[in-house]
Length: 168
View 1: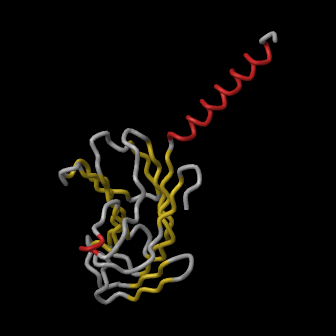
View 2: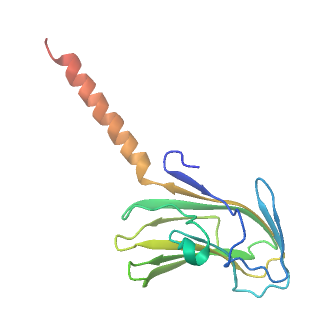
């Protein structure tokens, strides 16, 4: 879904980065439910990528392209038992594959600027001792678009005022 540069990222299927050993995974229309009390902490539960090779991974990219230098807000919509027993990791890469930055997010949202030298990124859902997880979506919003809308409406207002004051 994309409304005014808002992207909803869901967990639609299992792929090679999904931790499946001993997991009870159930896909519903609005959420994914996962139980795995024996999973070691620090393991990747699931991962979303901006770049993907279909021939190698048999998956299409699941994250939107981000504009360099723009500010973004990412919100994570999930419930977990026990509380705060999962976290998210965002990894930013240069074009040559070198890591630029790794951000660990333990809260439900983060605001950050997408670096000018970034080429791609991925988001990982990490285990910190969870027993039950109900994941709904990741919401990515471009914070730059709000200010550009107000600039456009101001420019339109100024243009209309000039037209009204012109003598024909």
